[in-house]
Structure formats: C-alpha cells, structure tokens
Image 1 (tube, helix red, strand yellow):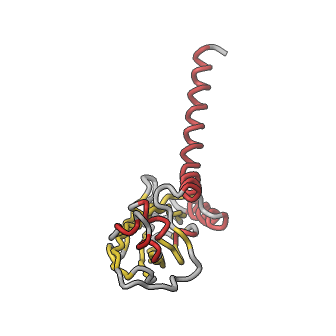
Image 2: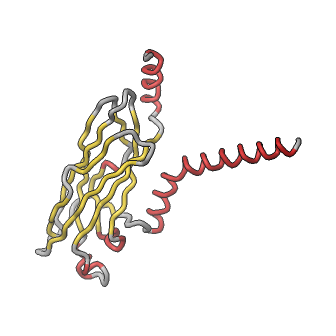
Image 3: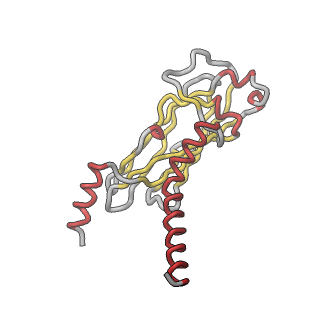
Length: 189
C-alpha cells in the first residue's frame, strides 16, 4: 500500500469509529447515569408515597430535542407546585411533522443533581421507546413525587425547586414499523 492509501484507510477507520461512538452515545449515557447517579438520575417506584408533608416544592418542566430529531416536543405545563410526597401528573406533547414514522427515546435528568435520588417516577413515557406516525401528535404522561426524605437530607432540605428535563433522540424504528416505512418510501415520488 502506498502512503496515500494508508492515509485514506486510516481516515475511513476514524470516520467509522466516530459514527459508532455517536450511535452508542445515547444508550451508554443512560446506562452511565443510572449506574453512577450522574446528571440527576431519578428513582422509580411502583406506587406513590405513603407520606405527604405540609411543605411544598416547585417542579419545573423542560423539553428539548437532539439535533437530528425531527419532532417538536414540549411540556404542556411549565411549572407545578406540589406538597412533598404528593403524586403529581404532568404531560409533554410530541408531534411528528414528517411524512414517515419516527421512533424516539427520551433521556432525562433532574436539576439540582442532589434532588435526583429524591425525585421518584411512578410512570413515565421515558421508560419505553415512542413511535409517532406521520403527522401524529401525542400527549405523554409522567407521574411522580418528591420523596419526603428530602427534608431530612443535609443538602436536600435547602432545595425549593426541581427541574425535570427530557431530551428526545431519534432511534431505529422497531422491526414492524421499519417495514411500513420502507413500503411508504417505495410508493412516494
């Protein structure tokens, strides 16, 4: 191999490596945050809290999209005030403006990060992948509470507001949807 060919092979290798790392970044980041608690990863529970305190806390909601995600995505309510331990229900709205089905997965975090272990999700659209048909709009719920133990925590007791933030990333369509997308593309000019 001459030097130009070696350089070309190395450059192609770097591009393939970078593409692979980019593809794996969303699931790796989710795994990393769950294992380390980095980024305000939340807790999960089967049911709401047994204890509701007389103290309130403000919850803020934020939604964003990965650069490649074609949907629109936003919280329907930007703030909510709840008693600590009370179960809250918030909705986010997603819309697929394209002419093809698009699958998405939400990553999330809580700020301040110290509040992550006290913010408990009971149900959430982020637990599963979402597929929106062309032109479809959906409202997706998240049910949650703030663990009353936050008031006894050395750092948590000073937290008066928590921001729950989601970012949607496009993912590969599930097998059944991929066949529909291929069929739709074959008939469109």
